[in-house]
Image (cartoon, rainbow, N blue to C red; front, side, top):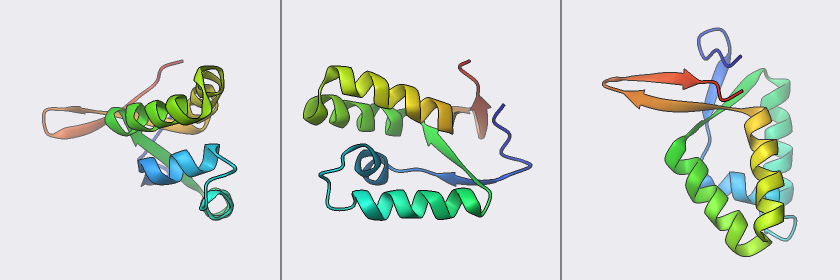
Length: 95
């Protein structure tokens, strides 16, 4: 389960998420390399719903619906979703 308290957490943005999924993107290799470095350093990647939806929309538009569904599954396996409730950010498990 996602636990931002006991692990270092990095909030992901749309650009790197998209670059990870599109091998033709000019930043794909850099995104892969930086993700590997973050994982080795013990970081957990967190996402906000708007970032996930924006990234998913781009992947679906430019890489196709079937690929987007696989991409989403991969992202959800490796990231924690965060939702805002009042003034705190709370981790969400969608398992």
